[in-house]
Image (cartoon, rainbow over all chains, first blue to last red; front, side, top):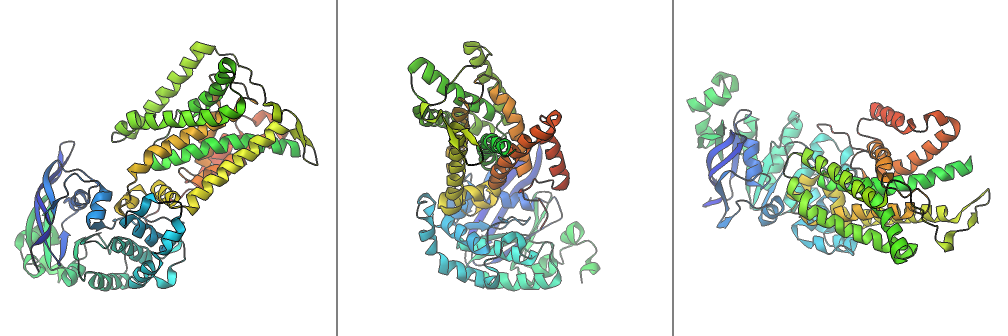
Length: 252
Length: 287
């Protein structure tokens, strides 16, 4: 592991007097899987929206390597190498998985201006699209409208979309939310597979997922960093236990 | 009855053109454009003024008026709508609603409330024998041109890259942006295009409907119902519902004339009860 690839410095977001994110410093090490945990309302999703440009910070800076991302628009952030998934499944119901991935590939390459020969141009992405769908286990479902996919497959497709951007940093917003045990196991495997060569930041509630994937964990509470460290350390931290995990014996 | 059905389709062509513009604007900008009817009215008045004051004929107006209104639409988006869109959506509702009233009253001040005459273009002044009945050539032209426009828009949306982006941005703006696609770049042209469609509908309406300042306000209420029935933001739904509503209200007019004004809204209520997202709308469900 090397130096930080993504950094937040004194990041804050205020909504009409309410500080949802209140001076967060974050160093995400290159190549690591970094989990953001915390009780509801801790500011995790707001922090995600700040990191990906969907919200403009009230204060603070965001750096990707040497590059300042502060105040950039979501599409710019995405093209510079920070891709995200959404907490609520967000797909185009009538488009097939293959079309989704091709759209993402087109977006990533900035070819969106040359529109008249679109389908011929899109064919160039065909192989790469097939590869990505295969990677997330959707090869057999490539031609089914996304609206008809099973829930686990929808989430896998979202992952493929983020991967299509070939991001340096992959932000996953609750990748296992609403999943049954089998889908969770599959997702954990998937994240393990796709983390190679990149950095993953994930918001996750499921502690067994965090423990099996995350190198480092940042615990947020009321918009601030409560504690940060490897999972093995933070899980015994009394502050974390009282803030988030509740009764320590309930978790084991 | 067949003839009445044909009337319905012609009426539906106007609904479809207007609803199509409203749907792309709503989808892309999240703005319910209450001024859409006013731009339809301006389209009709534009062609009237061109003919009356400058002797410019229908065919030129058919091209010039939508282009001019489309450009006006892009300016409107750049200068006002864009600045209001970070605020509560209500600001843009109020803005476009106010704009509709202002445009209406400006026209009223110049030309009064009575209807202005606009002759049919000479080329289309006759009738066409459709086999079962003869029909005014102009109405056939209106229906054909609207169908062509809707089909062309459909092809652009489904077969080209720009269409793919517009559809994607219409349905899921946030996801589209997170894929690295600059949605903002397409917002202005799409808004202008929607306005141009309203202008085109207005030019087409001039020779067959009363050209007066309130013609847009009268029509747009029904068009909103059409958009809701088709499914808010659904491009295909708004066009299909436009023609369908035209047909239904024409036939309703024939069989239950007492209900002719309310039939559309009864239909809207029924559709909403049955499918809250509209016929072709997407249901917002957690999965």
